[in-house]
Image 1 (spheres, rainbow over the protein chains, first blue to last red):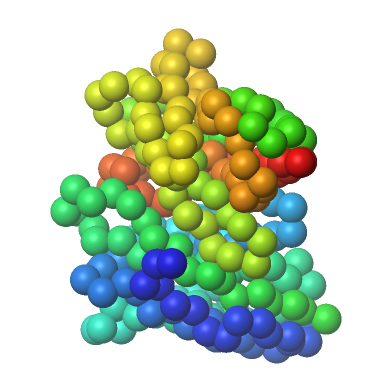
Image 2: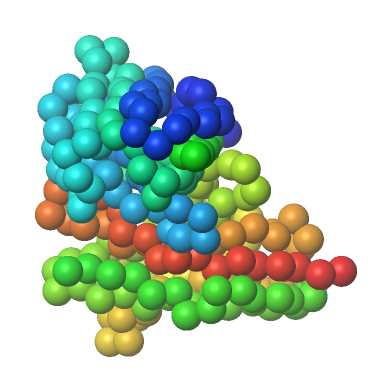
Length: 114
Length: 117
């Protein structure tokens, strides 16, 4: 197991609501990336945070937003939930620009939108 | 734009048989390639990676992969599989735009490996 933790494990929301997912990165890591994994698909990159600033973004609308805190933990916020937002949300942490290239993934948060 | 194609969505195989999971990528820049494994209800675990150097890469759990630039492939192999290898396997390429091998990962759709006794 990696040292990356995510909460909650499962979540059920109604269309139109807002949700916040949380990720604690592995000790010593300063970069967090978020991915969305729809059923039967590979993960898709949402965005990455490095030193509390967005460091890259995938093809997701602005209602997907994030934060990174001074302790390098991170939040993913999704507003105006749609049915297609139902997915497993994964975060991954890494120590950026140190030559250690591995991204360590957490177990994910399963979001169901009804 | 970079992309990854995993040619088989499901691969059934008997225990102790060899297996190859196929992956092709498209990229116009230097590539960094990865294979991840996902067990049911778990996150992703890195099996192996190619960053540079030797084209034959050895990973954990007896897996290896060969980077073939001319064929733009990065197939995963294991000479003898176990029941415990049953899982979903994802090939990924790093979008070097955002910082070399630590940039965002572009994943294939996955291959479900089912090992039967």
